[in-house]
Length: 162
Image 1 (cartoon, rainbow, N blue to C red):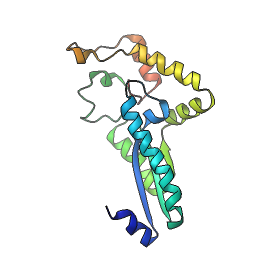
Image 2: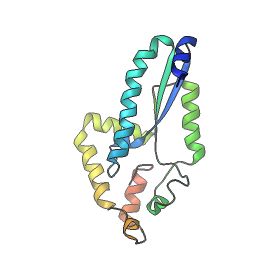
Image 3: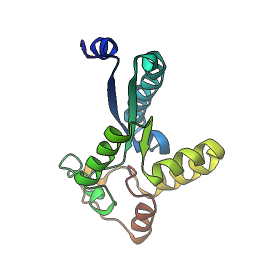
């Protein structure tokens, strides 16, 4: 791709990467996916310093779950609060207009701060979620239904991957 060199020549540009709230919250059951998004974040942070003098902005959006056809096959997500596509678009529009280094929901910011200050609290909360939501029953051909405790926990952490 020749786009970055062109941005550098023009001394203007904005690269927006869609990351995941899982990077901030350390989402269980998604370690490979979160690792790939974390790698993109690290790349973006390094690149940001390299292109700063060329007036190129880089933004990472830590997107929570968005209610799209992609998540529809995972029936448990029917019970989990998610963003609408319009709300997700609003996060992207905000990034375009304001050009911040990162964009995250309140839950994403809280998860990041919690892990920075008290990583054991983050581990306990994620472990509770991990144990409350066992591997998908759909993966063994059974229907998924949430009990009351699972529904309450999912509401407490909206947009998180369970």
